[in-house]
Length: 217
Image (tube, rainbow, N blue to C red; front, side, top):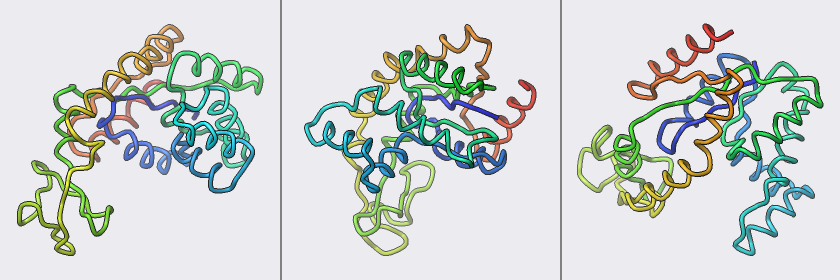
């Protein structure tokens, strides 16, 4: 299957992308991973992307598209892939369509993870991370530490990252609504969108997604 995963920040896209890709035996292609891989391997695209980032500028769509194209042409993606974070806007979606058409391929589904805005803000703004080890993550409501502000694992101080503040989260949501959300209507016109609720336990959401994709086939 060739799937695009869409949803607001905090909807659990990363978690669901990993689980779905493993279950469906297709690679999980994340924009963040693409950038990190190209930059660390110092590919031409990575050097180009880094030059924009170092200058404090957004990486142009054509660079992101070229990275995605290169990754989708790898042997492990012959049987399908799951795109997470790409396309991020309608122009990228149009470019993806052109690319797939050139390769005589097409998308099977666009999985839209829905979550109420207040819940998204609550999920992200409630996160607390250990200063000693960023892998130790807690949540003030869902997974609180035994002692407020103290990591259960190592005793380090727990803090809220700047990116997780409510103000920043709401700004990220604004960007999502204006730039990324329009691709849902774009793909709805092609009959590709499968919408599911991102609420509930992780296993429940994964099961819901797999069932929806199965029905859509």
